[in-house]
Length: 126
Image (cartoon, rainbow, N blue to C red; front, side, top):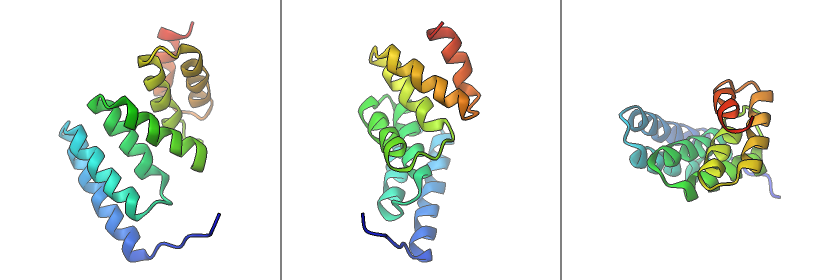
């Protein structure tokens, strides 16, 4: 894998797009949020939070395919151990009937300190 360098200008540009994404997300405009996060991750593909936020927005929009895709990318390529991508990925698996996979991901998420995962785990995995 080649080492990639992203200029500060590009990082700033992506950050502005991510801010727009957050504004849309807060207004419950999840598809629009997802698009802004996608635009951000195309520019700054080394920042895992753009992928994670896109996954979250698309999950909320009901686009499970994109939510799965972006959360998988974080788990496979970055593994930041925040628990958020594991959580989003688990929610998608629960929606698609993959409870075993989901419960494993929720356990990981809880281990990483992502507290939101606990309630879903208690409801669906015990």
